[in-house]
Image (cartoon, rainbow, N blue to C red):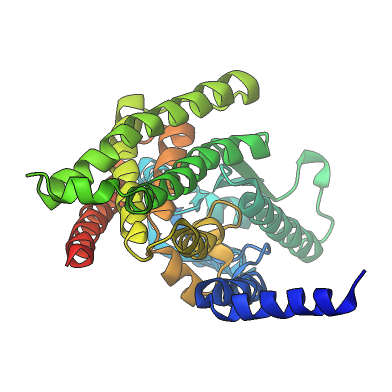
Amino acid sequence: MNRERLRAMVRKEFVQMRRDPATLRLVLLVPLMQMLIFGYAIRTDVRNLPTVAFDQSRTQESRALVQRLTATGNFVLREQAESYDDAVRAVDAGHARAAFVIPESYARDLKRGRPTQVQVLVDASDPTSSASAIGAAQMVGQQLNVEIVRQRTGANLASGLPIDVRVRPLYNPALRSAVFVVPGIIGMILSNILIMLTSLSLVRERETGTLEQLIVTPLARSEIMLGKIAPYVLVGYIQMTTVLVAGHLIFQVPLRGPLLALYAVTFLFITANLGLGLWISTLGRTQTAVTQSAIFIMLPNVLLSGFMFPREAMPPLAQGIGALIPLTYYLQLVRGILLKGAGLAEMWPQALALALFAVAFFTFATQRFHKTLE
C-alpha cells in the first residue's frame, strides 16, 4: 500500500467535504439536534395529565381527595365537569386524559363509617402515560385507607376498605402497546414517505432537464404543484388502508369511530405533507441537498409529535415545537377516531389545524417555486 497515494486520497476527501457545506451542516447539526431533543425534550416519566373532576359531593372531604390526587403530580385539574357524560366527552375529545368521579354520598359515607367508591377514568390509549396515572390513583386510595383505619379505633375491615378507588382504563383496558403504536404508524408512514417522495420529485425534474419543459408549458404554477401531488394522494390512501386493515386483522386494533371522517382528515394530512415536501424540494438544486433538508425536518416530526413519546412529559418548549408539526394533530385524530370512537364534532380543532397546514404549505411551495423560476 502506497502511503503517499493514500494520504492524497484522504486529503482529497476532506477538501470535498469542505466544499459541500450542506453535508457538513448535516453531519454536525443532526447529532446536536438528537442530543438536545433526547436529553431535554424526551422524557418517559409522564406527569401533569390534564384532568377533569365530576364532584357530586362538593364537600370539604371530596375537595381534599381531589387535592390528594393532584398532589401526586400525575394529574393537573383543568375544569369541573357538570355531569358524568361531560367528563367522558372531555376524555373522548382529548381535552382531558383523566377524570375523577366522586359520588354524592362520599362525605356522608365516610362520616358514618360506610365504604364508599370513587371512580378514576384514565385514557389508556397510550399505555405509557396511563400506567403512571393508574398507579398514582391506586396509591392515593391506599394511603387514604391507611389513614382512615388508623383514625377509627377498632375498625372492622371485614366489610371492606373505607374508600374503594376504582380505576377504569378507557379505550385500551389491557394496556396493549400495539393498540397505541399501530395508529401512530399510519401517520408516520404517510408523513415520512410522502415528504421524501415529493421533496425529490421536483429536484429530480430539474436534474433530468424535464423541469424546463414544464416551465414553457401554459400551466400555471399552482397547476404544476397540484399535478405533482395528485398521484401521491392515491399512494397515501393505499398506504393508509393497507396499514389499517393489517393492524385490525393482525393486532386487533379497534375501529370504533367513523371511517369516513378518518379518510376525510387523512386527505388534509396528506395534502399538508405533500405541500411540505414540495416546499423542501425548492430548498436545494440536487437530490442530495434536498434529502438532507428533509431528514433535518423529519427528525422533530418523529420525536416531538407524540408518536414515540408522550407529549405530556415534554417541557413547554418542546410541546410548542410539536404544535407546529401536522403529525401531532393527525395522531390525535387517528387515535381518537379509531380507539375512542370520536368524530369530527369532538375533534374539529385538530381537523382545522390540518386544513390550515395544508393551505399554508401548498401556498409556501407555490410561492417558493415561482421565485426559483426567476
